[in-house]
Amino acid sequence: MIPLRNLQAYEQWRDDPSRKFNAMRWHYRGGFEDEMSLSEAAKVLGIRESSSIDAVRKAHRKIMILNHPDAGGSNFIAGKVNEAKEKLLTSKGKKEMDMD
Image (tube, rainbow, N blue to C red; front, side, top):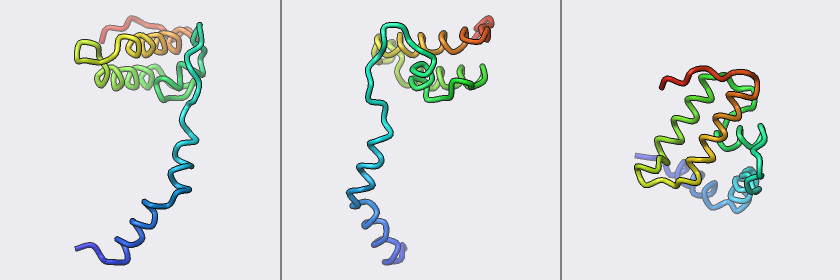
């Protein structure tokens, strides 16, 4: 059983209007550029620009599993995710044979 004071604290936190505002201000508000930049590619995959090859591939795989066109996902978003992966892997000569 949850103590009453913990429940009250949770309800107060949940209903705090400043929490909702602060949570929304961190979302990327821009659209896609004509040619994807490194910072935009990193934002699409949710990683840093300086991430390792494995981190780029893991982030790409995670997003593509959730949004693959064969599983009802968007072709446009899948294309942008693939473009972001390629941009990050080729940016610093990181491109290797992608056998996965």
